[in-house]
Every structure is written in structure tokens, then in C-alpha cells.
Length: 95
Image 1 (tube, rainbow, N blue to C red):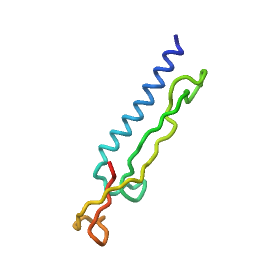
Image 2 (cartoon, helix red, strand yellow; image 1 turned 180 degrees about the horizontal axis):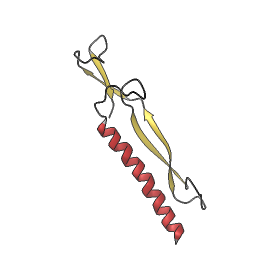
Image 3 (tube, rainbow, N blue to C red; image 1 turned 30 degrees about the vertical axis):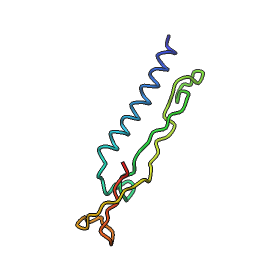
């Protein structure tokens, strides 16, 4: 019985991480400067893998294998923005 609970808990934890990343993406859709990267916010995407991350009991369940920062950007014309390039375009996250 505890094995079934462990499997379902691993799925809930993995989905919580995915939803947190999605919330961060939405919250930073117009973030021009991210101090962590020195440029615009980079979209996060979560990748799952089979098997439990800790206390692996037979390889069942799911865990987050990687949280990737995707360097996908869009540009917007805003010459008044201090982060605009010489042509007046600002690099924004591609969310």
C-alpha cells in the first residue's frame, strides 16, 4: 500500500514543480532584465523522468530530471526603454 502512495506522491511533487515553473513564466512575461542571467528572463521548462528520485523502490514513480532555461526571445520596439539596443528594440522573454 505504501508503494502506491509513494508513486502517487512522486507524481504530485513533479507536477507541483511544473506548475511553479509555469507560474514563474507567466509572472516574468515582460521581465527585461534578470539579475541571474544578466539579460531577459529565460523561460523555464520542466522535464520528467521515470523512477523515483530518492529512495528508489523498483524504479516506479516519476521525478523531475531537469529544469531547463530556454533562450527563446522576442523583440519589441521601445526606444524609450533603457535596455533597448541601438535600433530601439528590447529583448523580451519568448513566453
